[in-house]
Length: 209
Ligand code: PRP
Image (cartoon, rainbow, N blue to C red; front, side):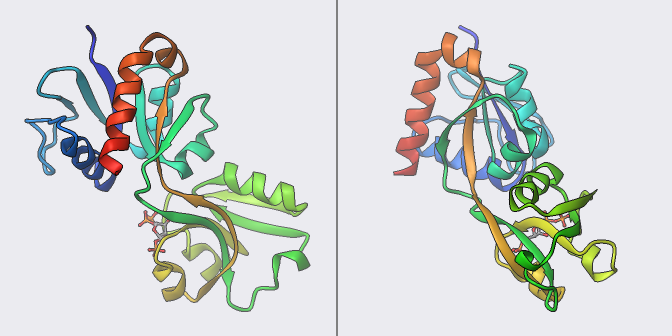
């Protein structure tokens, strides 16, 4: 039987996911945290892990290159991928928030904003629902810099400890959504490999308990 393919992002998510599976007796003997390898098999060869960029996990699952993905809700929302989201792994907890300079007027007092974000899709949807017209600037990191140097009025970004916005003199102006790591599944894989996918989901659940 073909192994089930699970797409993961290297780093904390992968380490926590592998720890979770390890607790339930699924081991990846070749895996080490500092390995540069991108593919690992479980001891019984029933699971194949592939390491991809976090922003690409949804694409691999949507296209069927992976049956299952473990990825942040932030990337799921931004990708718009047509996948099933079946389990909250309750790791990597943070929030999508709007942040801006301390003296910025509240959002309900503005009708137009320039917004910098790594997540322009999420930002556009949020402000559209609020009836605020936005000019979006897509950045790939260090987003907190944009309002500091006058490139944008506000940002939409992930806030975890709040240290980055505080240390850069910004404040949270609104919370958009709670984020955490989720288990996602390709729709046709779920139809054709229901039993083995359900087994993996049960193992993740057991590991969480
Ligand atoms: C993320 C995010 C914030 C920061 C939030 O950035 O985009 O900048 O972490 O965490 P905090 O609330 O605990 O400070 P990341 O570390 O991924 O770096 P980046 O700026 O390169 O995206």
